[in-house]
Image 1 (spheres, rainbow, N blue to C red):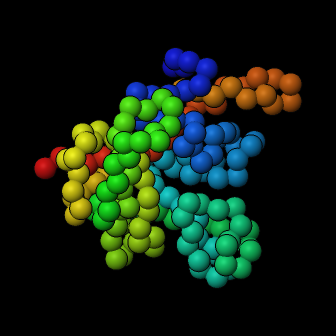
Image 2: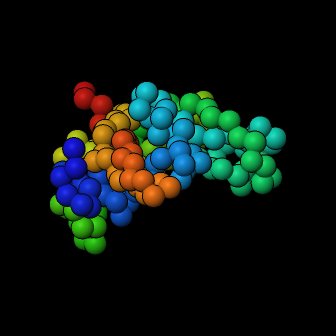
Length: 165
Ligand SMILES: [Zn+2]
């Protein structure tokens, strides 16, 4: 449910941090990333030509420029390797601190580390080495103009949260 013109969700989501604000498949060639998220899968792209795995997902391989990519699953759990709490310069819509973690997805993961927002995470509680997991949540629907018609795009976004001990 849209609460405001600029969507924000109690400190979980801000359009200023959204890498791909328009998720509709007509506008976004990585929309499958969101469809997978909706099913609880955390995915990225792998090049069918050279095998390079890229994160965030791409439409063209950064190694060989092929556009023949496939979707592969990433682990949904990892360990916080570095935790950063930002108390200053926090984007509009957020109460400080904004917590980011450099997450170690493990040596068997095709992507070893990712950077993610942390939510459901009180300040000064997340420590290096703590287990974290993917969390997917709805984002207010986004209106788009498509062939002179307005279409509403249902949206999801993701972050990570601490695994309860
Ligand atoms: Zn490639």
